[in-house]
Amino acid sequence: MLAQEVHDARKRRPRRKHFADAELLQGSGVLARNRPADDDEDVGHVVLLEQLDDARHEGHVRTREDRDADRVGVFLNRGFHDLLRRLVQAGVDDFETRVPQRSRDHLGAAVVPVETGLCNNNPDRPFHVGKYMGVRLTVIGSSPAHPNPAGAHSGYLLEGDGCGRLLLDCGPGVLARLLAAELLPVDAIAVTHFHLDHWGDLVPWAWMRLYGSNGSGPAPALWVPPAGIENLHVFASHWGTAGMFEAAFEIAEYSTGTSFEAAGFEIDAYPVEHYGFPAFGFRVTAPDGCVLGYSGDTAPCEGLTTIAAGADLFLCEATLRAAGDDADPRGHLSADEAAAVGDGPLLLTHRPTELAVPADARRARDGQVVEVAPTT
Image (tube, rainbow, N blue to C red):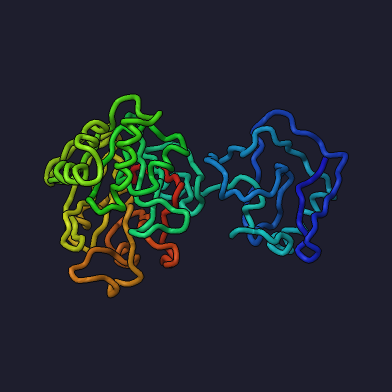
């Protein structure tokens, strides 16, 4: 049996070790111990052999779930155990030229710590899914007004027990991502405002509903801001065809001060400040009481504070490097301003990739899945 390859960083060629006396495990339930090399006193006696693929590009994997159920587990004999210990002491990064970010990426499925409000999911590990609880948030797109490299614009999919699929905003690139991930049909879409990066993919969605192979089935509910139906009419009269949106969606306008139901979730819309443009943020409540706050695009304002208060997860834009970079009137937040608003778990979004985030903050990434559970 061949142990996993360890590339020689100096000679740039693989080396292999052969262990003929390894015992095959029978049954299941083998847990790969996976910790950063600098934390390991002892690697342990059980590993799962696998190719050194970059785990960040794999599909959803649950905690304690093998990426490949057919892999072979072995009890290490003393020689292989000593070899692996030496690799860890030297640091796996010293032997591998293509380590992405963390040495633990080479040691199999992650053991993800439980965090308040985020359940078993580590938001810094894209596509990693923990035990399902409360509301599942899938980040479809997280770019600011200009796209991040290979990124989609704003689109956040919510699912929950007793609920359907609710999409918050639908910017360019979102529909293609939903199709690729087989996340259609969507039961309802709620749009925060009519800047193109938050609603632009409603146009190809309408054409898909009218003429595409994915156009069958019930029309999704589409919730738009006050005067939103007229905005859609104006767009269709100039760049589309009359009635294109009504043929594709069940359209309704929401209003401030009145909750509306979409895909089984209760949504309260609050006006926010966005360069004087009509814009809203959402406070979304699942049937089990789990609350997600979503800022939309906004500067600091009273509505944003209400959206964030007590939320089990606050999904907040952080477009600016610094508050002083904004225009007058203002319309966006810096990361520091976003962090100052909420009083619970925070996930920053709508942020250019070239801008760093504070050390204690988390950045949303396209394809990321976060499990949100009530914290009280």
